[in-house]
Image 1 (cartoon, rainbow, N blue to C red):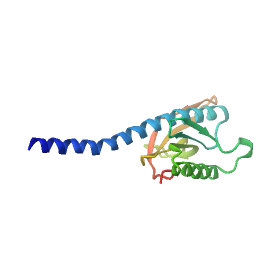
Image 2 (spheres, helix red, strand yellow):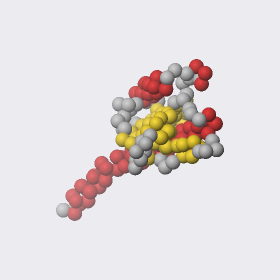
Image 3 (cartoon, one colour):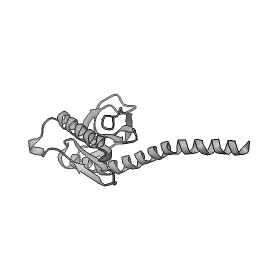
Image 4 (cartoon, rainbow, N blue to C red):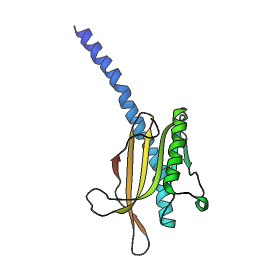
Length: 163
């Protein structure tokens, strides 16, 4: 009897473990993408007061790529850039070339506990495991022209790349 119970418990652990490993991999990938995207966006805001959408992906070997599909002086609308990057990442994901992707853009949003819109860095992240989340960092320009960045908060997101 005890052999059967141990086998059932062991089998359950083996079934559940891959799910935890997928979540852990997604969190690691998201951390790596955020480490590339947020500082670059903050730098652009500090220098220019804004930025155009850009993205980053992690390939199957774990290499991180930062990408912006257009140069500043020849740039279409932000939404068009986001759509182009989403479609490009989706195509690369369906070919198995990337395991995670993030798109970073400048928005106005209402942070939790507030009632007025503020500028924010919005990062949409996805992983091949199906995990998807938006990470948002509010910011504002101070009296002397310096920018301050608020606390990061998250929002639910439906996958658009790994579908």
